[in-house]
Amino acid sequence: MTDDDRVFKALADPTRRHLLDRLYERDGRSLGELESELEMTRFGVMKHLRVLEEAGLVVTQRSGREKLHFLNPVPIRLVHDRWIDKYTEHRVAALADLKHTLEETG
Amino acid sequence: MTTMTERTTTQVYRVFIRATPEAIWDAITKPEFTEQYFHGVHIEVRDGRRWSSLPDGRAWDEAVLEEDPPRRLVHRWTSGYDPQLAAEEPSRVTWELEPRENGMTLLTVVHDRLEGAPKTAEGVAGEGWMFVLSNLKSFLETGSPLA
Image 1: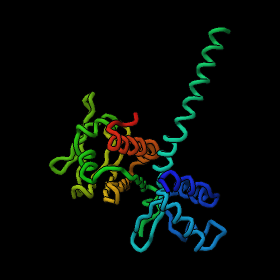
Image 2: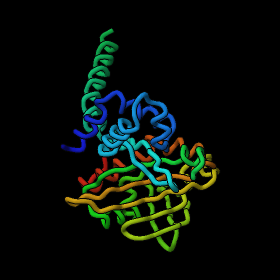
Image 3: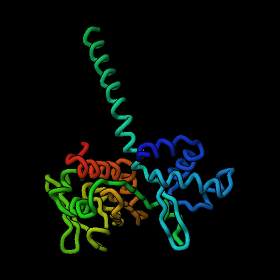
């Protein structure tokens, strides 16, 4: 599996997207805090966090006795650069051309 | 035990780069490299300080708190490129470089102690560090930055 595959796979699940949204709202949360916001067993939350960690979307840092989870936005940015920019740039350029043509002739 | 404020004012960025820790170390501590991907800033780690300057003459420097080449660099952060941000309290940036298989290195950047620098925190979050890190990755892997 490539890095991109892991990111897409991790994002293909609503619970994992929900976890990312929670971390986006407030970063640096423990497993216990994340678990308390989801209707799911501790084991289930851990499993999802592991997939997010393997995709590099979540990074854990030890802080004393606690393990805190941080959102790492870099893989999403790289996927964006590779898969989204490329296609949208073209569309935006096409629209800009259209606007230009319409305004010229109008 | 960290306080809630400390946690929410910590930002963590991590990226795999196909380069050796030595090459990444050079890229983050030598001006001839930084000016190619770090918003054109000329950055040099020398004599226990991190010296930054821009082509228009703006210059500032920060204390280096830990220097263990090519694995770990910790320095203070002052946003000298913007007077409003520069007036805020200094924060801290930690670079960790871990060699991995297949010629890859895992680079982790932690920007913390941002409690006294909310505008800087907002400025470097999202676009700020991401621009620098994706540019650094591209620069090291392909020889040219994205932008």
